[in-house]
Image (cartoon, rainbow, N blue to C red; front, top):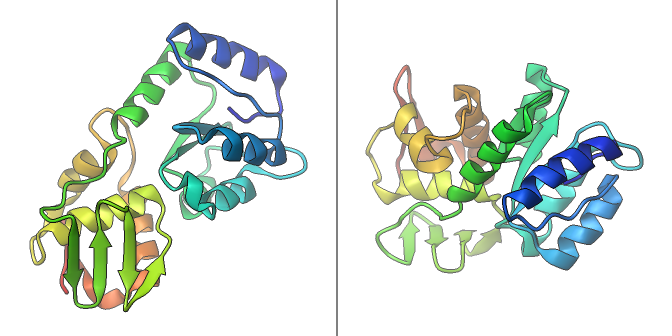
Length: 218
């Protein structure tokens, strides 16, 4: 947990520990990076407005660290504007939770996020699709022989779409398979992740079916 308000760290940390979680706390982004690299946590709850290094910058640095590629990152913040949420997902977050939130509700959200830990199922451990290689076992993607660093949800979204090239996956399919039924995210979340995949892999692979969803075409 990363927050510059000690009362929040104490209250939420207490509730998580009571549910059996091991909790490490940091008052700012720099300390969070140190702790994350030392302990490789399953989940990071990250505030946005903090001294020394804000949440967005911290998230980007966490996502650049290969050792933390499977760590789930969720913003927990009072900043609930649309542009802040978009910026959070652009930085590599898996979820965006608005304060205030009741501790019991937050604990349920944490459990739901952790239940989503397994990557999407691909039929073969490794697939080669028009120069894009998806290696499920190593959790890496190559484009024309160059390894790409994809955040966890981008990898899972790509793996899902590429598991059946040409098939149209509805938004409901995508949300259920990648984000899970227990977590509330908006359609914009999918759009942001598709845009990031297009930037890294190319526009031509991802087709938008208006009002329905997306498909992958190698």
